Image (cartoon, rainbow, N blue to C red; front, side, top):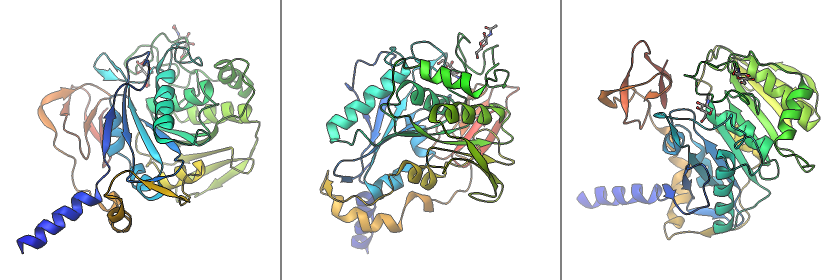
Length: 370
Ligand SMILES: *[C@@H]1O[C@H](CO)[C@@H](O)[C@H](O)[C@H]1NC(C)=O
Ligand SMILES: CC(=O)N[C@H]1CO[C@H](CO)[C@@H](O)[C@@H]1O
């Protein structure tokens, strides 16, 4: 009996062989950010690299545990990079407003993230033509900024609840606690041409390939208003040179409206009725198929001896089968400030919010002080 239990425990540890690892020494790191990486046991021979960016108050670990991208990495052999931003006044957000971050090789967060990508490509012999970025909220804003500043690096991107590239430009700071919230309040609206110019000006003189975009937003997002979804579409339709051909309701599922541009391969948007900030699920398989990474690797190399056992077991026991019951209690003594995380699976930080903010469960993985 004991033997069986031991065998099961051993199998479990073999199944979850790969894990999130923190990495140092990956580059000059101009803005003091951090890097974590998830390298599946069974790696494609020239693996694609997908960067996943957290929202304000989060970090790479939280982004990892609040999404299921790694289950697909296990299956398809691509690498995931989870950067963590430098914390700003106790609240870690991405620098989405400064000229440093809004300029190609400007010495800001965008450059640091690209250094993490270069490190990963070099170390694992990755495919430089297959690098992608996905992000939520502040991370979605960075996704747009990365598409503007590094179209040469990112082949496609998927922002969830973001704003157009350079929407915060000139705000001097763009923490949601700031007084100047013109951008997320949709007081900055521009023509497609003007938004396009903003993106192009992030990398003057560049004439190469542009980042394809799949854009997601909740129609009742009252932190980053849904109008910003339209502004993002305007920006990328101009940059990518594609026009809207129509909308399709209940696509990909009930309550979602698809905004289709051209054949949908360059630009497509999904607006989710009745969903607020942080409530739109990542739709990992749609994002990853848009990127084009859900193809079975032709050849694979093993990074550890665990590899032989993982494949078959993982397909039957992905993390997605996790049963979601309650919000993790977290640390009851501490208080989280407004917009910070206050619960969710794997969360061990503060579970109370500084009044008048109250803890609101946005999805099983993420509760936020609102
Ligand atoms: C507020 O921020 C916007 C950019 O988001 C900027 O254009 C505007 O000048 C800023 N307003 C003030 C008063 O600083
Ligand atoms: C809404 C949002 O994420 N804004 C962030 C943009 O970047 C600045 C600078 O790091 C942050 O302070 C904001 O919170």
